[in-house]
Each structure stands twice: as C-alpha cells, then as structure tokens.
Length: 207
Image (cartoon, rainbow, N blue to C red):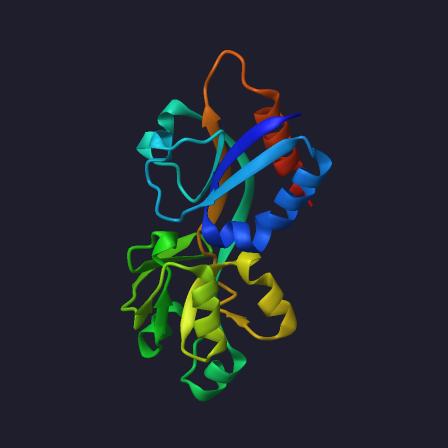
C-alpha cells in the first residue's frame, strides 16, 4: 500500500481512541502517507476531500450517498468527580439532575434533553447546562475540576474511571449508544488502501 490516505475524523474520538491505531497503521505501511483532519463540526462530510471519514453518532441525510461500515459502539454514561459528588446533593435518579450543575457537549447532539431507559421505560430529562463546550477533553477537565455532571461516551472516560478521577452515576439507567462508522465514496473499484484501513480499524475494536 502506498500513496496518500486522507482521513476525516472527530477530535475527541481520535485523540483518545484512534491515534494508537493510526500510528500503528502508519508504521505497518511505511510507503503510505496518512493525512488526518480532525473536525467535530462537519455535518456534510460528503463535500469534503477525503478517502475515509469517521462519523461518531447518527448518520445524517448527507451520508446517504456514501458507503457506511459500522466500526464499534460506545455507550454513554453520566459521571462526575468523587469530590463533586461528595459535596453535592444526592444523584440517585435522573430527575435529581435538576439540582446539579450540568456540563453539556453539543457534539453528542442531545439538544439539552438526556434520554434514559430503565426496564424498557424511557424517561427524558430537560437539562439547563451551566457550561457548554464542544470538546470531550475540555468536558473531562471541567469534571476533574469538580465543576459538575456530564454525559460522556464510556470509552472516552475509561482512563479517568479506572484512575478514580471520575465516578459513574445513575448506573441503573441505560443511555443511548453512539455508533462509530467509517464512510467512503461508492465507486466501481475502491482503492485497496481504503479497504485495508477500514478492515483493520474494525478489527482493532473487536474485544
């Protein structure tokens, strides 16, 4: 495999989960140059110049002209720092969120409504964020500063959870999952570099 592979991907997902794969893939194919563009705000990726685009979340109408391959799924969780939780009112059920400071990441496209599911029953909670920031890294920094409560994809908070820097709350409730897709343009002869990249990326996330 040689030449150039242009990859379009979200910031947080790439910085936390994809970069080890990207580096390993580049090492494996030294004749291939990887150009990686990170952007969380691209709704119409079909208008961008790329070979492969990574989409985290729901596919949109503009993606219908592309071939989408499911890579993995991330389950959302609610979390906060242990220090914040110790100093705040109880958080045992979704409606208790009204008594807490909320950090919202607009990249999750919740539109200030957090949807919970328990035993097949859905419950929507309208939140009023005290802080809104379109970066998962910034959200985690705010959480570790004991600022409030946030929703995050679990895979993007795994390190902080393992270190005890963050605590998952409302564990009895299920939240929507975020599917990660690899998208590419339909063509009669898809380049081998695109096929191999997607195949190996998918295998990378297999437990």
